[in-house]
Length: 146
Image 1 (tube, rainbow, N blue to C red):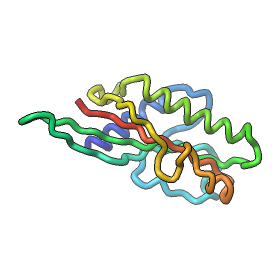
Image 2 (tube, helix red, strand yellow):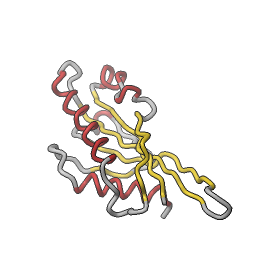
Image 3 (spheres, rainbow, N blue to C red):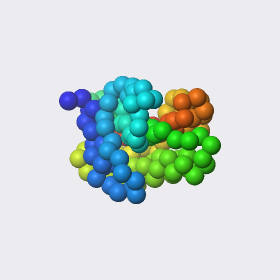
Image 4 (tube, rainbow, N blue to C red):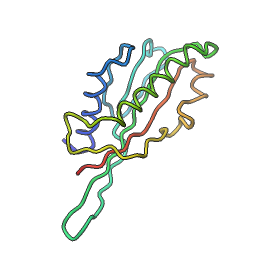
């Protein structure tokens, strides 16, 4: 399998083995598509995003991969406490991934560059919340393969 898919699978393993205080099973997907009516519970998607190879010398190189982690759930947009719970979960996931190595991909090293994924500037999508009554938030996590 490709490096980027392997790293994404390692992120899925880490997320699924940790207790975040709310039940979910993360899944790796290349295309996290779903219809609002199909989204009846919390979903956590792990999406391989980008891969770069950087030359480090005459014959050595390193790879950098970026992985998107998205939290999606139906929610009452007028309930601050309901939305807060998903914002908190995304922050917990962000902190969790930045403070540990990937146990099933030991050569991947987190790089200090986590940022919101496209369409979730500020950490979530206000449009999805307003129009679809769905929380959609995400982060992009960067790993360097040593």
